[in-house]
Image (cartoon, rainbow, N blue to C red; front, top):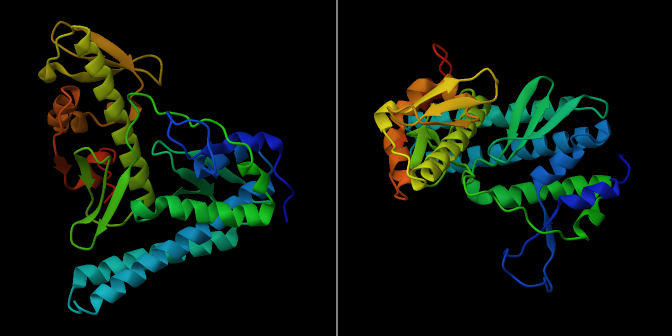
Length: 312
């Protein structure tokens, strides 16, 4: 069993109180899974392995539960072949996560990071896994169960003794990623503000999660940057909108109009998917004007994959 976590991990606490509230009275601090992962990223290997194994086991259990829910639906729709395929795909994921959890040993190298969607990302035995519940409304409880199991094993109760102020997202931060799973339409992801990517099937689900998070995060950053330029008097010409790579690999030039006015942003995913930018212009235009616009992009595996390599 691993030893106690160093006191530096106390910084991972988050007080569950609104930003404008007064001193907390009778409220318990809440530890976030992504904060714990950040503190453990450079920590002892056995602790990283413990968290990875617990998270993978939790993923296996929650996907098995999802498959069981679908089986109950199948009783009323025994001839629904789409639902049968959906059940098989979800159950296969549950089995893969369980098998991966069994391979984790205390000395196995494990990579912990926080993805663009602010969820815990694991690299175990060369495989990238996004630690996310299939039901977004259950994500908080799902993460808290993982933390509870980890702290019971590695004695980290002191992590929730010292509250610190929450980190507030910036004005251009993307809303939390939302996933829905439909046995007819296939899985889809959205940011809850009108833009949605709909996939055909569950194949390459981890890569789809990563690609969707990257696309939505960069699109929200782009919309916020354009809105700031428009507020300063820059004329926006959507037909001229284009992204060009710069010598710096992590910076792109975004041309805003035919006069060549531009901003510099980090948009590597959008730069690699120029066709996607043209398709989301109506949503970007509405977002810049502070309006809501619903846009569903079907066959998103083709749009978010690299040229000639669909994610579906």
